Amino acid sequence: MAAIPRLKPYAGPALLSYGFRPFFLLGSIWAGFEVLAWLPMFYGELSFATALSPRDWHVHELLFGSVSAIVAGFLLTAIPNWTGRLPLQGLPLAGLVLVWLAGRGAITMSASIGWLGATVVDCAFLVLMAAAVAREILAGKNWKNLKIVALLSLLAAGNLGFHLEAHFGGIALYSSRLGIATVLILIMVIGGRIIPSFTRNWLIRREPGRLPVPFGRFDIACITLSSAALALWVVMPEEAPTGVTLVSAAALNVVRLCRWAGDRSFSDRLVLVLHVGYAFVPLGFLLAGLSAFGITAPSAGIHAWTAGAFGIMTLAVMSRASLGHTGRPLVASSALQAVYAFAFIAALARLGSIMAPNHISLLLAVAAMAWAAAFLGFAVLYFPIFWLPRAPQIRSNLIPRLAK
Image (cartoon, rainbow, N blue to C red; front, side, top):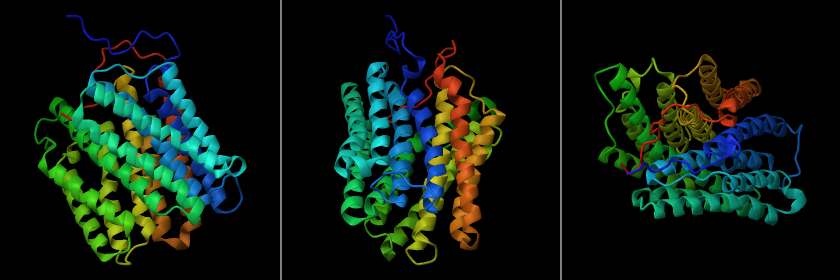
């Protein structure tokens, strides 16, 4: 029997041959740009014709702009592995990219075109993504991964809620927490599969000995408790029961991370960076939990998650998936390691600006510059990889099946 082709016959631009190429590129560029723009907006030195406040524009474009694009790139690349179906490419992929770009323009110019029109344009992307993912998973009968459809739908609902809350309430608080919580659950679900899998594969080849514990009941319990803690945090972040549950989730996530044998992966930076990025997940739970008791500022946990977990994990996943799916060696070059280092510095500086408010101006500048260097540096470094056809090596199954 002939092998099922992994790609349709395609003669168009390589950039549109697979979902990760345009979305990882655009998502990383937008992540760097929006932070560079936000800092002068924060100081009142720059303004756009947006109906959102500077704080809301920054939060929205991180969560529902750059992070959503990167999530889309990952899922459009992973789903063919989960379902055995052919990937989205060519004109349909270009159409989805244009919808995302239209959303960025609509948000930035929403004061001119009207908040309702901007809402419709911007919300279309995540709705279409959820529909596309649902279609592929249902057609491939990959029932266990329907949870990804549910999370994408929740992210789309959070985006709609963000627009409504910002317009009618003046600031989007509940919906921004909902968006953060949804992305965190995606990281816990997907990271809980790929981190131990990639670590195990590397250790078996290079470092025989203790291996990561496979996904099991403990992981399910950890994700369940963490999701419950996040639900409480979304609704009542400053209440004592929320604090207790968040701290408990932090403890479980620390244990979960330790079970993945990350301490044995120091010589492979592509593997190590995944563990470093995930470490900000329990740190965020801890800081958010402590803030419920007035011990830390509420923004400390938020930025541990967004600047730390979101920033480092997205760069880790983008860099590894892009190398593997274009037939290149899975090796972190010196330049890529510098990208990781900048992301780590950005996370620490952003947390430092909260913990040491006397130095907030300096630390915010360091955080913004390091974040932009990480994401724009990644875009420059990987532009040839996204633009050129894949190298003629044999493709490996790089993204494990979540339903395995």
